[in-house]
Length: 414
Image 1 (cartoon, rainbow, N blue to C red):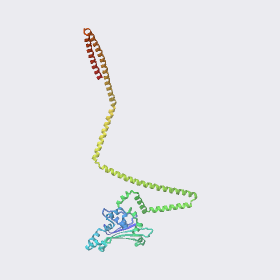
Image 2 (image 1 turned 60 degrees about the vertical axis):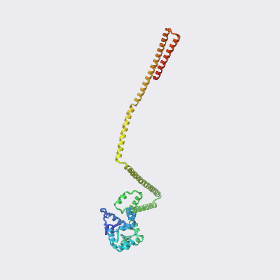
Image 3 (image 1 turned 135 degrees about the horizontal axis):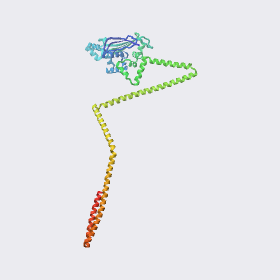
Image 4 (image 1 turned 90 degrees about the vertical axis):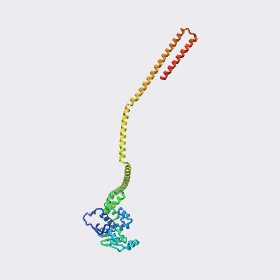
């Protein structure tokens, strides 16, 4: 199947008839290039609109947004008319026409500039191979009438109307035999869609993409034929093989089935693992974004100030630890020195106490001898007995008071 030409008439920026032909170059690859705003996306949109009409909403999210932004397919289709043609029509309308349009819609003004009130897109396809419909070329033309607000599609097979295609419905015929919408979404897109395809993550999107490419490239048919040939080969071997070979073949067949089941299970596990990885990646991105937002709440100056404070605290900690280690080295000497001083003080107190007790004993002996000498000297004097008793009483009382005071002072210092 090869697109021979595409013709646009009054479609958006393409005023009048604009035809693009594609000659076979052996590679079947063509590049459409141009500056922004010169109609590349419009050209692609015309191709999708010609094939699917209002069903183009299922081809790509971009077309869905465009239709939603236009507040419905009706307004979207009317906006596709070339602006110069629409302006000419608007200027040619009389006040009566405008009143009729306000009352009955554009149908009431039908007939004014009939040729400029329509636009269409036509696709000519050659080298067609459709098993159900033998043909060599197909022409698809979709027309929209601005006044009647009516859209029509024509499909000519080998230049004639095909009753089978007409009975099935042209939209269904295009989707089932020309290009399915599910396949078109991966083949009819502009350069921006390439980025979206590269960022496909979900397993479902990957599976759809794989299925679409398999159908377009013929891989699916090749796999079906290969599977059928393999089944026939096994069937023939079962019939022609001997009993021993038959048993061996059955065993191998069972092993193959077992391996295939194992492969299916592993594929399911792989799919679940991919989904889990996608979920974890999403969580990672969310946490990273949250971390960035939290980090942005602190200014760079504040962060530098905190870092400087942390470094100062670390340096102070190192100095204090160094001082502590130096003090720990002399701690035993400090403890022993204190104990030594206490021992010296205790020794001095004990020595002082012993000295005072010895002095007290000597004083007592001296006082006793003095008392005895006074008494003996007094006997040599002619004293009366009453005087002697009084004298002994005074001496005894004086010595007792002196000894008591001395003992009291010794106890306080000792």
